[in-house]
Length: 549
Image 1 (cartoon, helix red, strand yellow):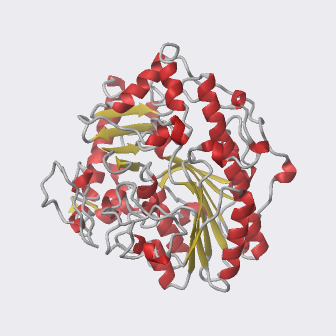
Image 2: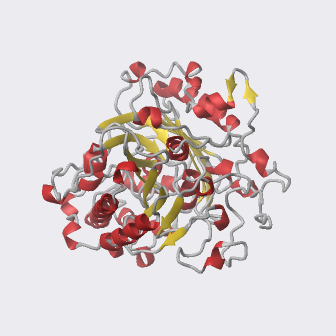
Image 3: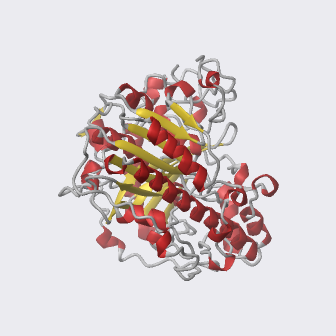
């Protein structure tokens, strides 16, 4: 594919090559090697950052919210009956074959909202059952809060600035003719994964896996993701079950990898609620502190939470199909989301609500009922899958295998810091940012703060996307001035932001100039600088990242 350079790039056209824009495999910055930094999730960096002790943090006074704070509702509201919860226990012991099946259930725009983590007002019995039979991660983050970059990161084990897929891309619908997924496609995009980076699909195909993907594509270039089967299905749980059952059967004696995309939680929400019994009443929803608690906002949130319950139903029917296929006991099941929910200061940003995602992994040999608070990234999924399949992990992969955590091995640890990034949601909507969190302190740098941020249309447009949250915030600016100001601040941001997620989960109070947090700010700056150096994140303006054909 010919390289197409973006116009109006504020950088020179002779930027480092795509290989240079990735991380060098031989870079050594002092005693901290690239491999030690990336493979340990910056565990080695804590020698430098050992001052970030949580014992000190308890001395930090709380930062109370202003009007529009937490709104607890009965945790049992809208719950399904216990008889509707399908149990999916795994047999004790490890894998029965050398290479396991892998079912990756990828929700679309679902944030950290499940009844197993006590989200008020909703019931997700099938997600809860997966957590009961596996490992629930409380501090998992997508690499980017936009669809294409996040999904390509999962399937390459690399950050978007490293693999080259830094924004949403133009792609065909999943059931388009075969020619649309080749080099002569009418839906080619200049942005995409570099040609010499092996994808999970390519690797598994070569090792004899039968691979499939459902509903949503959003990957570029198309030929780098050669799934054997692309499956169209609607938003209903019953059709998804049928399509999954067909795929499980077609895999025969081969191990399979199914990337099951479930899109109920993507706007417009109302179109994706297939069962009225799964609707959540507006009075039962939880309104987070960063959003205005008005009837219109509650209506919008009610629609979202209803789609979460519908998605949960689909998780249940999918697990039924897997159990009925007889392949459950040799299948690793991963449930997560590409990024957080479709609200301002979430989707298409690096704020916590945008990148913090649910993650549950269950299967043979995996601890049951285990909760992990350590930080992990969705770029860790690819090396984990390859590790289980006993397939060599490519050297370019920046993720780490989660098997030690999943199997409860002594001393197993996740990442001390989780890094996320944003470049652009789509062509022309770029606003580059980077972030780092240790689970409590969240530090953000906005690389081009002189720009005005433009939110995606599905966060603003009521007629096209059924979005009421933006309108609700504007209408309530007098009653909820803090939430209105937050919306304004989202469009025009400072160069740096710092938040205490324990005291301020809505990220309302920017603590960048608070002297009480100076020591944490210093440590975070050091870690961010080192991570950018180690991953060769040298290009602030993403238009300077040119795909290596």
